Length: 140
Image (cartoon, rainbow, N blue to C red; front, top):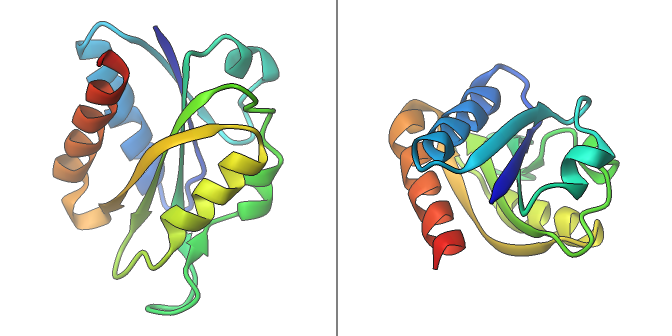
């Protein structure tokens, strides 16, 4: 089992979350490679059994939330036939960011198994919960 974790980060929080998820996969003896959206390759995605896509929550404080840099996310390599998970980091309220990110990943052909919001001031706890759920979904 190999996973690719792709992130779009503005302040470093989503990047940190991606690396924490990768560390949890490593601890579970599952290969995981972490890429920013601009650095992921078609070959990396093609070789992955699971693709995780994460972004930050953009928008006004409590309205209009959406995936940060959604156009960059929409330009990711094809995810056709790939099992995927999504996450977003947020400060105040994530709104419908997960639902909107799910649609972006599905348009790329990915099968989204689930997603989770990660609050930036609970980064370690929320990321650990996401990784635990992710591992449970792919091991079962």
